Image (tube, rainbow, N blue to C red):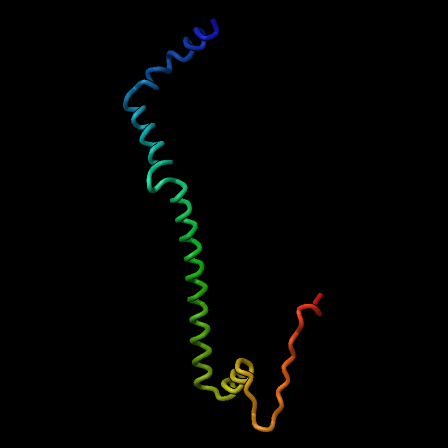
Length: 109
């Protein structure tokens, strides 16, 4: 008896479910949403990857600008060039002694 009552409650909604246009639209939506080459998951992954690549692009553009500014300062200022050579390449003048202090990773604990 419960099955008949349940069927009678669903019966008014049956034309909507059996309507071939609505059924076709539902199948199409499910297909596009989950089974297609450009489904929701891959679209979201591509948007996330695009955001990461855009952030990396911004970072590298800033690095390029900083490096170009440093290059201009090195080309125009001999004191900056000397400082750069001493810090980066451990260069020294004749008669100077160079002492390198290396921090041990075990001593930091």
